[in-house]
Each structure stands twice: as structure tokens, then as C-alpha cells.
Amino acid sequence: MELEAGAIVEGRVTRIMDFGAFVELPTGESGLVHISQIAHEFVKNIRDHLSEGDVISVLVLGRDEKGRLDLSIKELTPAPVEPPRPKRLPRQAPEFENKLKSFLRGSGGFSGGGKKPGGGKGGRKRR
Image (cartoon, rainbow, N blue to C red):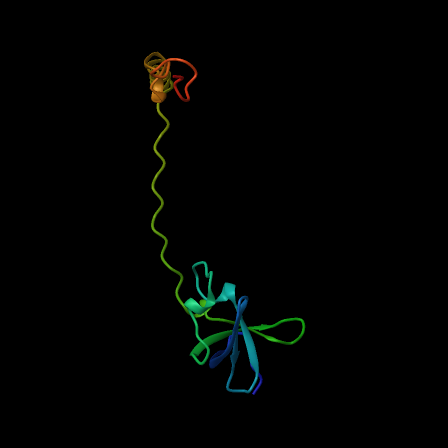
């Protein structure tokens, strides 16, 4: 039985590497689930998602230039629903921004304004 792109099959994880997991399929062939095809979210450590001996369903993506099977788990799971992005607030009128800048300059702004307590350039006091 020749596996074609789009086929969904079950296989057993035989080996886990940093870059992906090797899966043995019922046909006796092995294929690779690349780390980018494990889950929709970022996968730092494959072992957080898979263990050797796990039986998993995979989608056959196709074959690479050397004839090896490329597999995916991610393509069989629904993509997470992204929360709606907050709407951008309209930009304030320039008059308001100018008044705010003027106020902050006059009051010393957020830095507390002016000189540091104890005078001088800061640092330790001399004895």
C-alpha cells in the first residue's frame, strides 16, 4: 500500500530527536513529524507533547526530495481561535497633546523633575 499526500494513518512513535519525532506506520515505513508540525503553538521541547511508544494519528504531507515521508499532527487539529485584537484608540487632538506636554514640562514630568535630594550630582554623600 503506497501512502499518498492527504492520507491519515495511525503510527507508533519510535524515536524522538530535538528536531522531530520518527513514526512507524502500518506499512512498515517510517516518517518524520518535524517539530514545527507537532502543534499550532511554539514547541520548545517535543517530549512535552510526545513520548516514545505513543500511538498517534498523522497526516501524510508528502515525500521530500529523498523520498522520505513528511508527516503532521498539527494539520489534524483545529487551529486555536485567536482572541479579537483590541481596537486602536483614535489619536487625541493635537491641542490636547500640546497642553499635556506643556504641563509635564512645567511640573517636572514623570522623573520627579529638577534636582535630586541632597544636592550634587548624585551618588554617595561625602563624609
